[in-house]
Amino acid sequence: MLRKKNDTLCINLKKLRNERSLTQQNVADGISIKQTSYGDLENGKSKLYAARLWQLADFFGVSVGRFCGEKPDDSEQVKVLQQRIEELAAKLAQSELTVGIYKDLNMELEAKVKRKDRKIDELLARLRQLIGDRIFL
Image (tube, rainbow, N blue to C red; front, side, top):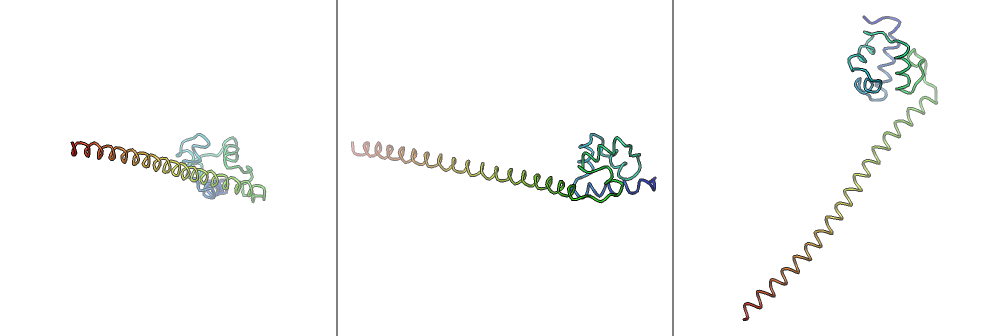
């Protein structure tokens, strides 16, 4: 039931989603609809009304004309790249945070082990002293 005039809209909708490595579920969640409803839009099985088109354009950060075949201008491409860089930076920061937490916990654990080792050494010395005292009495 793919309509000719919507072919371009459907193709560009799917292309934008794939360019951003998103699933249909990701987009559906982003515009608050069911995944099956979004799939129907992308496959031309459902009408794409103006309000939904504007919502999708806002979600993808593009102009409505982009769905109709307009080529992205440089500012739009820069915006997409900036968004991707921000996503990667957030992942990197999370990764660095995880490594930092691991290092802190490791240092804390090592300090506790050293304290325990000292305590064990003290107890062993005391035990030797007590045993030694009893042996010689």
